[in-house]
Amino acid sequence: MSESLFLKTCNGFISNEKPVWFMRQAGRYLPEYMEVRNQFKTFLDFVHNSDAAAKVTVQPIDRFGLDAAILFSDILVLLPTLGIDVKFLPGEGPRIETPLQNANAIKNLKDPQIEKELFFTKEAIEKTQLLLNGRAPLLGFIGGPLTLASYAIEGKTSKDLHQVKKLFYQNPEAYHTLLEKISTTAGEYLALQAKWGCDALVVMDSWAGHLSKEDYQKMALPYSTKVIEMAKQTNVPVLHYANGSAHLLSEFLKLPASGFGLDWRTPLKTTLIENPTTVFQGNLDPAILFAPQETIKKRVREILDLTKNRAHIMNLGHGILPGTPIEGVKTFVETVREYV
Image 1 (tube, rainbow, N blue to C red):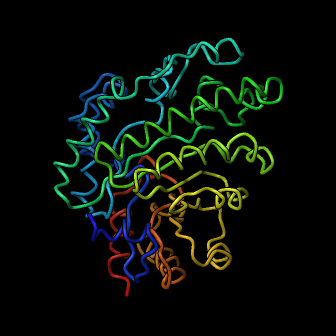
Image 2: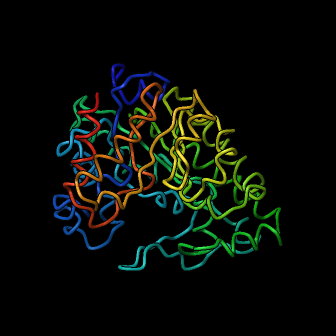
Image 3: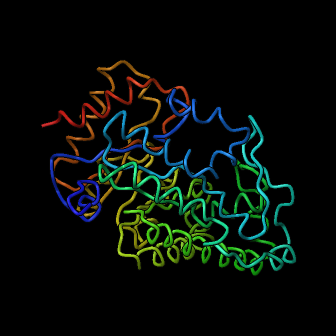
């Protein structure tokens, strides 16, 4: 993997040839993914099956020849190691029946045994690397500590992190106890993914954008910093991404990450000018992949023109949307490959 364009770019290598991959590149828009998904009664059954996880991880590499594979899993597999039961309800997403909303519940969390309880991740990484056979580096990932805590506290996906903020303001000691435990566990799990065979790592803090800059500094920044510092001890690149968070970019840049994913609401030209040596990833609106071919080409070329003389990873500003036309993804990749 030492000659991987993706890994070299993470380390600051500048070339007109840009690496390309996608968040959620293994997903419902692919018929071959759905063929595997339909073999399992529940989503967690699917995630826990290392053969199936390896198979769908490699599908986008087989189809598009992308420059990186990202392990098929879910950020919430970490919570059960702390004694937090997670269920995925059809059409509703993740649910936690007993959210953590008081100090006693947080105090009674169990001590995780990650290597034992998440053995299926290790197996999936090993099987995926065999299927990849050196064609692309493999990315491991976790959810950011704030995002993981949000599910544990809210009990489901939240549009405003109401219960998270309530806990923080009413019982800051309990909040920080929880975030400390989650960040330590997440950092250990992320580092283990590198130990088990991943070539790079990603921290996806999906809900950080719900915080103001001031709250992010207190509620999330120290814990994301801790996770990334633990992961970087493995000597592999660590990327950071958060959705809907353009207002927090100055805070993200304080993190010791190798590179930073930008969502599509971040003004790319200004961001690049203000941060001339930072490695960024993104940031095309995922909905543009539904557009006519020429529109996709135009928008991808605009990003390539802006990043011509710097290290940059081509990606979307969020994950591939369900129902995205395969031709849209193909056009994005081909435009990157053909760019001179």
